Length: 348
Length: 49
Image (cartoon, rainbow over all chains, first blue to last red; front, side):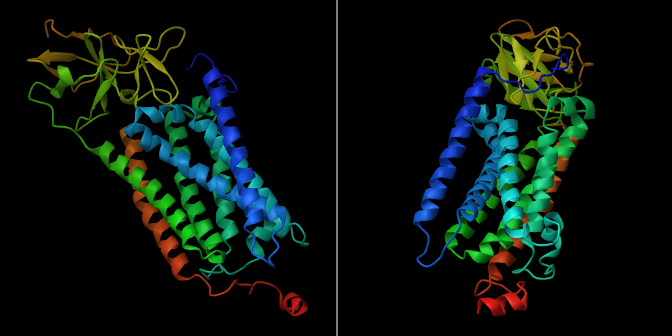
């Protein structure tokens, strides 16, 4: 939170997660290299460096595909939330693997000419007007540059100094990086390996990522019924409100509202976390505080303020219960304004 | 995400998705018959022959 930021927030959970991640990466590389060696066609000699280039390239692509699926999938299942908490770590590791892939490619394919290897990427193949002969490495380089920008600014220092709005806009660049990466593979590896398995895997990855983002993008723009004449929005029957969780209401104007149930109390706050705009309504109540599913920022239910020593504030909303149905006011209170929760079974 | 970011997110994917699939389809349709070595200098090709 705003009080302090550390170099990396290594909680025991994150340490365990990172160990599993590194073990998985090592396992993938070992299996790829062994199978790559065994499956080598007779008479064809692939140097171990080339095998490592392929292993790191495929791994970086698969990891980025996975990273981009985490957000939308975590909205479908709470079981995927641990991946959401560690998304930044997976993203930085993905960049490092892509960097190894690029470094080896530059050394292996461009390191022996008189031209500067970095210049060679852009000029060694001038067929920019061809599809099958397109210098696909340029697209990979573009993706790497964007991923570098993402990894370098993934730290909370940049989020705090750039502001959540600019930071979030900047990090949407990863979608452009993914498009460049799909194009890099389509115009590169797919031109040399005609196996339908490769084409199928690439297409399936692209369909999954684009489909999930389009679906969640359209779903999050869906607004609920307009507020009634008194300015109240219907949320849900009390019986449908799960303890420690929220229902998200999207008014036709303004930001979405997260309406939480904590035992017998109903409270409502802005759905937008002050840290990086995370969806608070997809989080839960931990230790009496609304906890953001993205990075664990917390707010008190009764006034939308982060517990001391932190100072973030979000808007609160009035709520009421009429005939067993929860309603929320469409008008936000100023951030940090105390708002008495509605009592289930009590007076509205 | 704020409403503005949600809109930007959706707009970005509405643009990137057709671009991505157009490139993918064209790349598959234009796969060369044999590995393409046209960019190699002619001297190298002769030498290897």
